[in-house]
Length: 63
Image (cartoon, rainbow, N blue to C red; front, side, top):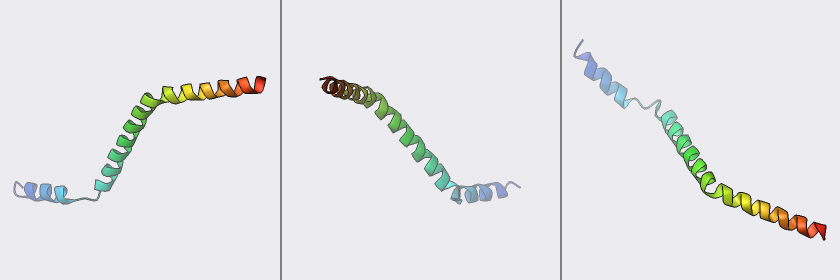
């Protein structure tokens, strides 16, 4: 039984069937982290620009 363990371990390490799923999961997590970080950094700036544009449009329509 002891001789089979290294053989099974080598076979498990060479098996790449589930590798693409793990790669996709890692990529998805990285995209989520970058998206959240970008939104936190630029979200308030974008929101303030939209509010400013809305105010200017409202002011022009009220004339």
